[in-house]
Length: 375
Image (tube, rainbow, N blue to C red; front, side, top):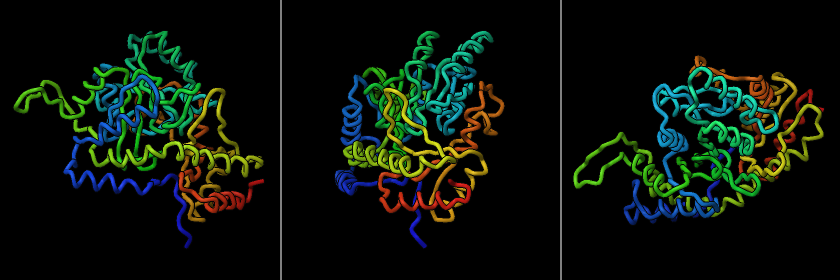
């Protein structure tokens, strides 16, 4: 059987092992060590903005700490993009707060500005002004930053910018992750660069960074004994994983280039098929093309493509199931327009790894063109 073509596998450089071996030989194996600071500085240099970076053990941890930093507490409401992975919203529930789901618009597939403002007005009329907004750059595509942030500013609601999928994407030349009051990155194994497991919180001041590090390292007070005045968490990244990150971030530009190459290949070889459409960049936006996604004309046609690819040992995935449709979130309010439900039914993510070969891409193309309704 041919080797499986995966959706978005890790792509290592070979240099990671050197960093890992150095950590082991120097005995820097836990959540302290020189590579943590170096990794944070490397992220900061790449983002090229007046920001601070805290490296953590996951993007989910980063969202949790961001919510805490913004003062979200039990029974508060947080507006959340419905069309995303559940990890964007789970930390809201960790705090006993309530997610308020908002649907997408069709230009970027991200949170809809009109519905966002409608939701804010409605929650305020009910006496529950939202405490924060979690906006996501889905599949690396920046949300409508000017419109969303202008609304947030008007109603004085802070934004957590979930850029877990968008490292390397830009809007007006500014890198995603640096627009929000707090930004979030993920370095999970399927992301554009990986630390195996890891994430980062991006903030605007050293004081906030110090607070986040304090909370992420069990909130130990400055005392010769173990003393705690706040609840803390075991959320700091390890020195070993930071070393992997140092090797990875050196090649971030190449990884973005490769993902864009994948999109360009699929777009040029499949765009003439009347049954398939793509999500193109909008004005002033460059996406990292973390995952290239297509839309079929119906759920049935989407499934035929997916199953044909699977029969050829090629992994593909339906787009995210909207969170307002997930059983675990079904009791929470939602403001919907049907767009994310339609995208979920018709959308499919194609193999998008930065280590795909031209032969891999041709195999995907060939499999799709074998589907009987494709024309």
